[in-house]
Length: 443
Ligand SMILES: *Cc1c(COP(=O)(O)O)cnc(C)c1O
Image 1 (spheres, rainbow, N blue to C red):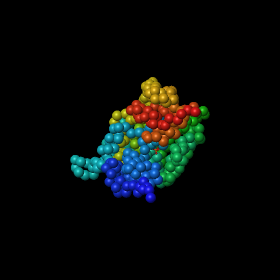
Image 2: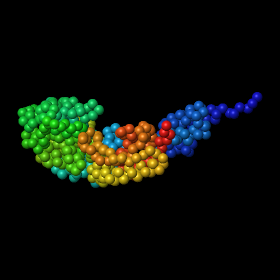
Image 3: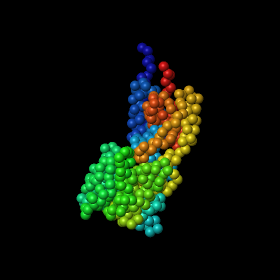
Image 4: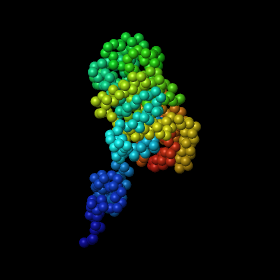
């Protein structure tokens, strides 16, 4: 008889023993016991199958666990699309992230600390919005741009009254959602006027009657129509009588020199709009939210009507959104703003530095000039000069699978890592992610 090596499967430590390993204590505190236990069970299976040594179970389980208790993973946006809808649109500023931390606990979002009684909700965020938008006499915040628009329709026209809107503005906003269907789902009646390419003031004037609730202007934010086109400006519509509601989409609060065709909230109110709706997480650079801004005159009363409408309670934002929105509006420039304002020659210098460092490590990298875009259904056709590190195409998939994942784009058979939507502080992480891609010898 020979004494066989003890079966390694017998040496696989028991689950409770591994879970008590100090190496996993931090993970248990961070992620909770069930999540860590699943990782331990998976590592035990690896050990029984002989893929790892029994002694490695705790370490392998620990290494497989994420840094935070969410399945959502941070991704480096090297796509050159500033507002990437699939990446959660606007990244928040450090100031907004700090504000989230403050609001995350119990906080005075709806308490007057002086009296100890209930106070108005989110006053600071609403004041920040009014301060940031000249001409805004009143503000309110809903869950997103679509909610703000739906609420306006429900509150002002939901009893079957008419919303007059140009046929050229009956747009689909993404993921199959369409403005006309959204409006009609609130009980409002749609009164389309004009044609796809041309709508005149007389079209609106002819449609106005006793059933008119308001005139709606929807900024066609994700496409451009060129050629034989004409639309009526807010200024002219404001003279017709009924309230004018403008969905500007992107949430640009004041004009930006690089985006001359993008309507801004202040300018739209100055043109005579009574209500402006917009998203919080597009060009404003804040959290997902839907802004509702009322101009002078009737605007403030309309905001109040919308805010008191029963459905408003179902669409109101939480304390986290209010805190992050306030910090984005009143705090230091948002990342989106910094990406917009980035100097192309500074981007090129970053790309040159990165490419040189990667070449020194034997990686086939070059710096190249590129064109980035705003994205997120905003500023269609706007080309933002940018720069990228170009790598062999195979890097695109490998970088997405990396840690942290990097989303580049493929162009001309190369994987382009565009720097326009990345802060300079991300460059070292980006280089590390590229270096971590296994080198495959060229054949
Ligand atoms: C993006 C957009 C919306 C939808 O806003 P969300 O915040 O995504 O709900 C509505 N209208 C216009 C014009 C838009 O650009």
